[in-house]
Image (cartoon, rainbow, N blue to C red; front, side, top):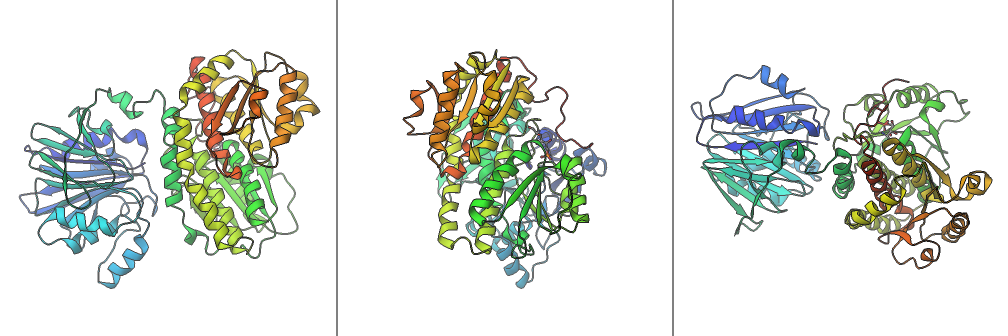
Length: 599
Ligand code: M6R
């Protein structure tokens, strides 16, 4: 996830402060870094940026005496990680420098307009256009120029802007991307995260959406979109730097679970149909999804969803098995899902699929990763770096991308009408709110974790689109709590696993208000008749399930096929709290690596 820092103060130490503060955002992950400083003596903005680490950036950096500057770590979303795509970006005059977090949805249209007006661009980013629009709107007042600029933007942004003719000034704007301001004596700061600034101040203003801030000569003035000054709310933060890196959460996994309302939102905002324009959907008779672990489970959700929305048969294969399968005598669209884009088994399967003459589409979170260079087409999750070994936020983003892809394929194949696509999209857009509602129930989940923490084995059962939810719930539980856990299609219990059920083996049963509901209820009946404690995850309003168990976790009403998203939040939190109560090493479980680059 990108990181932003801005500083202005009396002393000429901007360079040192900006690099030091930026280093404190390294934990968020990044692929390039940069800094822009106003050199008052020369009356210019000096920009230094490059792909690679902050250390590498520092090595090529001359000492610049400056009291104002901005800095940035970039996690690529538009344009590969390289020197030119790194921030800060400048306008044509080179006097304006800007750093940006977020995604500008209408950047293509804005860029075309600016090019027609004679602007020249050096990067492939959506961010660079903002510097050029500020240039257009600048008539001597930087604050006014930025205010006018954000009126034209659609999407999300946290931006900082400086101008060579305005030493001692930074203009900051926020919309759906976090930005905090800080102050100590004559020094004022801005950052995407208070972590960056804890060494310098404990006094913060958390900017709200639509606000614009003017940092000038040691003061901060805050405005709303209409230009009306608003009273800032100062807050004191007493976190240690280490706490703050995890945003105050005990573990990265928990932080990443809590990020999901915004990562799902970002995934929706970043959906790019343009990436699929060359896809030969009309010519394909079937789809094959290939992946490992959690990504494989997302692929299984994708199977139900694509078959439902697009009417194409889908097979899902684990990557490590795919290469040993027999080639089919017809080609199909192959979708490879990999959070890291570097999983060796998935890459080997991708190469084999291409060798067999199939068209390939990658779904990944990491720009510039190997998978993106080798697949014919790529879709990005835009979930920001995931540090916890257990995949959480990237799973829900993978599932959301698969919903969007299924709708897209359904529409292109004439299986869905535009109204049907629009109606489902509206439902998908409610998912961040449903996730938020579940996150507020942590206490209930923790109590259930207390109940199961001594178990030696746990089963997860579900049907249809929540059969993969059962597999994923079990994977999360086993990898971080070290409790043996298995996921089953609920109908399979009576074909063997039922023999293991007794009061010592809890069963997590996932229900959805669809054609599988009644069958799931009778499976729960079978389980509770054997004395197993049942934890049911079901939709709000379900009055039947309480007849079988008192342990019920309710998720807000969503379209049944979308239920794997809210369900995943419950299973992630249940695994997390069980592991925590058992004193496990949550972010780095034993024997596991975040990215498995060996076959
Ligand atoms: O980076 P990938 O999505 O290709 O990784 C695949 C699996 O190794 C991964 O999903 C793994 O199962 C998760 N870390 C489990 O939480």
